[in-house]
Amino acid sequence: MGSADDRAGEEPAASDFPVHRRFTTRWADNDVYGHLNNVVYYEFFDSAVNGWLIDAAGLDIRELPAIGVVAETSCRYLREISFPGDVSVGLALLRLGTSSVVYQLGVFAYEDGALDSRPRAVGRFVHVYVDAQTRRPVPVPEPVRSALAALQRPA
Image: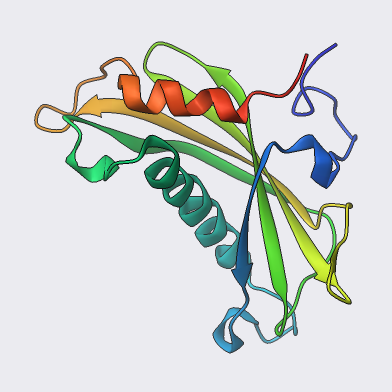
């Protein structure tokens, strides 16, 4: 059985993500069409991944000798979200390589105080770890690699 990322057309549920991070939408997030602008989803992804890494690794990832640079992102928009409201960004590990990490992200909205299990958007986020000085690929740092175990889906 493949990952949720491999099953085209299937939508992951909120429970498919081992970790969630909550965000509050802002007035400036809406576009002229009355829903969150697409760039806001990418801001959620970046903040969810890096905020979680800082918390889970227990250190400031900016001070590691290797840094995670974003090599690829994508987002599939499924249902609208608009201000005001709270969202939860679910994180799951799709693949852990020698120098790269592929995350799956799900954006879920709160409705009447409860988290809707249907995603509003599903994304992919790839970090490639490089030496902070030379910018050449290096192995994923051990504190990050250890923290990523929390994003594994149960078999």
